[in-house]
Image 1 (cartoon, one colour):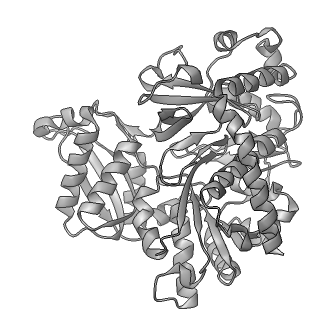
Image 2 (image 1 turned 180 degrees about the horizontal axis):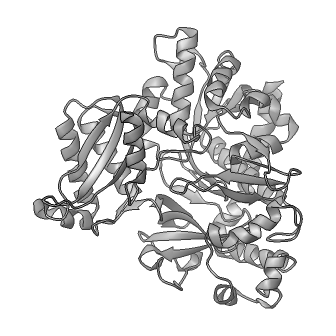
Image 3 (image 1 turned 135 degrees about the horizontal axis):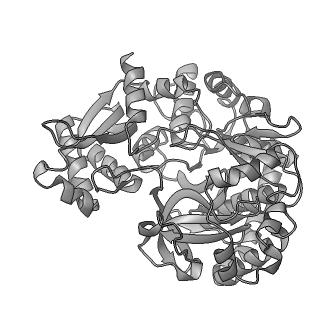
Length: 507
């Protein structure tokens, strides 16, 4: 049965490439068409009536009339949808909401997931991502086995019990066409279990004897599951191919993969194994690798999203000028705004990106607008941190399991600095050398950091604090944030997380 499914699915995906070429060849026309469609649909909503969408003729009028929004400014409208009102931000009733805590905000966010967003954004983009894969791996046997998905759960909407809220992965799982159940693992009742530690045990039991050909999940929890399966099956080789010999693809996202690559390559020692990065969030499926040999991501332009971009140096202005796709430049750091068929209007998603190619439009994620350290004018972003951690680990034969960093403020007789809490899978041969390589790499990557480190006056050398295995796990557990989309924040511009983690570890 799965062989027939594989033949049909691979044929459909290969044919899809012809449609993908349309937005690759005419990106600005496609974006304009989506803008026009959203204005047409939006004028039927309470939001559209409030902002006079019926009179908006072009993007310039849209930018002048509609404010840039963050979650807090949209929430009064989202709340009305949560309570069952219809035609608020997007036509119709919203049946599903993705619940996300984000990485720097304790307050849960409820993101509308409309039928249009499911079908035209999330599912369509997922199909396109696999089309890229089959184009490059025409010999793939992907659908002859099962796809392992490591995701979250959903529950009744606390505002209105006729609708549901949950992790976006759970929303997608619950809404997939039924025939996909033949192709995925674990069973749906296991996949949607809410308690994460019990779920890992149940997932291991459910999938360890299946023929798994692909995995999709956050790297950290994928590693936890793999090691749990090793323990249950008594696998001493630390080679997952002894469990799943036909495994050929790992689809990852949510966190930077490079710090985990070495661990995965050790656990999956196959030259034919492929790793595919994607930019899929509660708010939409924005981009994915279209070239397995290149790490940057192709921006999806034909999936119910209209994009605007703010140069990061202007994003804290009261009325920053935004750039449409045709106005962006290579190598410049932008905060990304989205207008979507889920009713998110000029929404600042909180991510920063840099364009690496303009034909086609390709990006790399450089960080979060709220996840950075700039306590002393150093403007350290997540991308700097990720690259420096990888360099330090390589130089000292270390493997990093997880980490976070925050500022150390000026003391009476000491300058400021950065404190790094790091949990290692394999500790460095020399922790001082690890620190020095981390510091030197940050200087090379970030001129502001380098300037502040000159003479140790504004910034002293980094303080590295090695945490025992399981420290971050226990912290997440203490906050009720295990699994799903919950992640350890890489950088914070204050010490709240660092103090909590240290208290949890020391307590």
